[in-house]
Every structure is written in structure tokens, then in C-alpha cells.
Image (cartoon, rainbow, N blue to C red):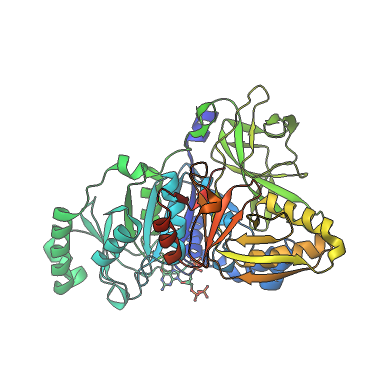
Length: 530
Ligand code: G4P
């Protein structure tokens, strides 16, 4: 296979969902179809996977959760699939957002009885910002589900994206009878396939075959289906691949990941509709993924994945060309031509040394402390920079002080380095010097990570004092407004980031609204590209 074909068969996506919607279960079933595992049940359950990463940060072991996100690569039907993990639960962090910068499309898993939930909403916003295609899998149809029309309505209203159901569920919970495939105009009957077997005992019945339909569904379910199909055909959004690819329309599938129903159909359709690796914006224009020249950008830096080696791994997404072992690349921001040392593919607890990788793939390389998030690597004779990765709004803030005042130097060095890796963000009071440091994080676990790392790597003990702020806004038109003179609510706080950009901290959304009202012309942003 030549390198163009290799790139074209790649599909790189992230799964976004709220914890417990079924992301892990769905991923396991994908792997099952891809033949990466034999029995779905034998994929490391979340509990065992957590222990398997035991030589990663100690804190992971202590808390039994994974602080890091990784990538899974597998083959299916001629495609080479990269699934980027977006950690949820307490380990939700800015990395979760950044991971989405490396994906070309997203699968959104929604629990049919819960609808759109908080974390999905947050991750969705990032997908919209990037205008990547989003494919929806409404899961757990084997349990009592919300009304189908209501679910679609909720997605449209809450997330502001049009929906196009590709199949339509017939009942739910104990009364779940299967789905109607709109394209093939047939009903696929539900069968609770045993965990681990690929083939279900599903039957296909044409919608036009009245007798068979009644026999398969019963007359009540059949009548309801015929009614809903008519409604849908008249009122539903038309399927339009261009709109899907522009992130304006999401194809919706219904199924049950646990009982393995509707998963393979979803995977097949998804792979057909999802894009090949997309061109990326650089300061010299768009870079074609099929270009012969290698290029990549760093989207995540993970420190101390292996305590014994105290290593730092920089994760990069290859955007064009092909990577070959030992080839030379230019690290643009560092101004150096270098060889990447032992690029690896990191899959949960497993590391595989790679000899080649293509646009669309994610590789992890040892970082001797030279890479920063957003850095570009390209062929030695090239010199361009990919558009930077935005800084996303933290939601938890704390004032941080070192316990031993004599250790100020180590403290500042440590906290700055950890901030540089992108694990935390640091802010200062707007008018004062470096004395007071405010730390902002996307997920509260990062506070523990910070405390742990400062103690273990820099020998500095710290004290964190939680602050009540939950919302931060960058001032988009900072050159047009006089920040000193801004009048906000009494609980608003002015701070600046490491680059001196002014920001505002708020306790609640109401204060944001009031501040905007009181300062006409003020423009606030939820993320920063500076
Ligand atoms: P997550 O990664 O999004 O957090 O969700 P995960 O797949 O771990 O699923 C959360 C729970 O929901 C699990 O149950 C899982 O078995 C269940 N689940 C996932 N898909 C379906 C589905 O289609 N139908 C039904 N009925 N349940 C589903 P658990 O009891 O919390 O965990 P476990 O003990 O089964 O691992």
C-alpha cells in the first residue's frame, strides 16, 4: 500500500460523552469488531485497566483512576482507526479538551434515559468550535428510554445542531423490539446478543412486508412505527453529507452497546461518512495531509508516565506525510533539527515502538523538556507553524502558597514548569507582582496532581485555598477597553495570565451578564488563542 492509500484509510476520532453513558462499552464493541480482541468481556474492564497503568503516576494507583488519556488503534474493514480517549469523571481536565484538537470527527454517546448531560455539553462546544463532524449514538435502548422525538429535540435545542436519525428505535426497555433502518426501509429485530459473540440473531424485515412485520413486532408496535416513520419522512431533516462534514448536522443512531445491538451498523456507517485526515491550518496556509512531507503538532504532554524513568511524553498528531523511524524532523519552536527518540504508540498500559506512522496517527515521543503544547514538527527544509491550541477555561480556582517560605524559588520553578506542560493554568492578581499565585484547573483532580508533583519532584509543600470562582473569561478586545476601569459585580476578580492577558473571574453566570451590561462594548471569550 502506498502512503496516500495508508493516509486515506485512516479515521481519527474521539468519543465524547458524560460518564456512564457507555463510552467504554461502545469502544470495547468496536474493538471486538476490529478483531483487536476476541471477547468483548475480556477487554480490560475499567477496574483492571486502572491497575494496569500502575507504573504511571502514583496518584493513579492511589485513586484508582486514570489521569492520562491514550489512543487505541485498530483495523476494521480496511480502515485504520484511531480512537482518542477523552477521560471523564474526576480525571476530566484540560487534556480532555485538547485531545479533541487532534481528532477529525467525534462520536457522541448519549444515554437514552438521560439525554444531553453536562460533560457532553462541554465537549460538544469544543467540537463545534472546530466544526468537526459529530455522529450520535443513543445508547442503552434496552433500558427504558426517553421519547425519541424528545431526545432529538433536546439535542437540537441544547446543542444547536440539526439531527438526522439514520435508524429509528421501536420501543425501549423490556419493550425494545429493534430499529427501523431508514435507508434500507427495513426493521432489524432486537436480539440480546451474548457478550463476546459478534453475530446476533437479528432478523431483517422489510417495512412493506405487513404480515412479517406484524409477526415480528406485534400490531401495536407496528402501527406506532408506521405512524412515526410517516412523521419522520415528512418532517425530519434530510440527510446531507456536506452538512454532516461541516458539523451542522449529526446523523443519529440508536442501539445498545452492552447487548451489542446496532453497534456494527453504526460503525460501518460512521466510517463511510467520517472524513479522512483533514487538512490543518498553519501560518503558511492549509497543509495537505497527503503531502509527502511529515508534519505534526503536540497536543498533550504527560509527565512521569514511568516513575522509574521520570520521563515526559509528548503526544503528537501527525498532520501530513509519513513518519519513519530515525528520520530527522524540525522542531520549529525550538529552532532545531532533531531525531524523535523512540516514537511510540501508547495504548493504555501498553507501549509499542513504531517504525512508521502516517497522517492521522498519534505518536508519543520522549520529551527531554523541549516541547510545549501546540508546537509544530515538520520536515527539516520546511518551517511553518500550525495554528496554536487554545487555552480552555478552567472551572476551579485556588490560591496557592508554599508552606516553607525559604523554598520560593523551587516553588515558582515547579509551578511554572507544570503550567508550561499545560496541566494547570496560573494567574496573578491584576495589579500586583508574582507574590500571589492563583491556580485554575478544568478538573479538581489537577489540584491533587499539582500538590503531589510539587512535593515529589520539587520537594515543595504547598497549601491550597479554594476560591469561589467557577467562570473565567478572557477579554477579547483588551486593546479597546480600559481594564483598570472595568466595573463588574462586587464578587468579580481581575487577574492576568502568564502572558499578561487580562481576565475576569466570576462566581456565577449572572455576574458575567451584569458585567457585560455595565461595560458596553466589552467582549468576553471562553477560551484564548493567545
Ligand atoms: P462510560 O465509559 O461512558 O463511563 O460508561 P461504561 O461503558 O463504563 O458504562 C457505564 C455502565 O452502563 C456500565 O454498567 C455498563 O455496563 C452500562 N452500559 C453501557 N452500555 C449499556 C447498554 O447499552 N445497556 C445497558 N443496560 N447498560 C449499558 P456498570 O454496572 O456501571 O458497570 P459494569 O459493572 O457493568 O462494568
